[in-house]
Length: 237
Figure 1 (tube, rainbow, N blue to C red):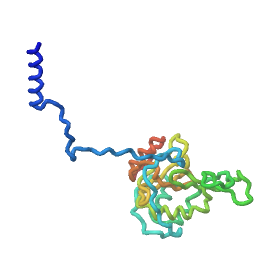
Figure 2: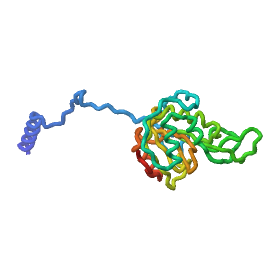
Figure 3: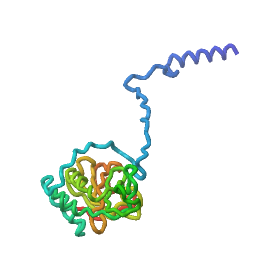
Figure 4: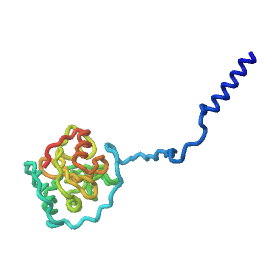
């Protein structure tokens, strides 16, 4: 027994000398990966059908709505649907007055004003529910405005866009921006990545930025985001 204990002690001493025990030294500083806690995410309460992916970009005060807001952009191949062609041509030409004349909107019942809403506010003394001519505009939510206010939105749109990207068509989706019109004319944008004009069969019904969609500032990114909501590509120039 004494001989067996002695052999075990000799074996342990030999293994220790050969370095087979665990290395307790700290790793080199270059190998240490610092722990980065996850960022705190504050849920957005003003969006119902889209996830914000970037912060808002300041947009300059739009110029007055005239026929020559800026130099014309290069012409693009058109989809061949007259009402869409007219709007695209006016936007690329920088002709705000022409674009504004094509913003027809639609009749919506007004409501007592309580803040931004898809339902336009009634004028003083006008009963709630009275139909008023309305167009839509927004970024992360859709707000309703009187057609008479379209000058400012049309001018801002023309000052912001840099070219025509394509046409999307709404599917059976309801809610968010896709419920405003039948077609969506997509333009490249300096401030938003992509900027849209919503259309129905008669004319323009809304102007929309796309910051709440993960578009990457491209028509393909916009297509990917909107196809998830039931839309389809109708035309690419």
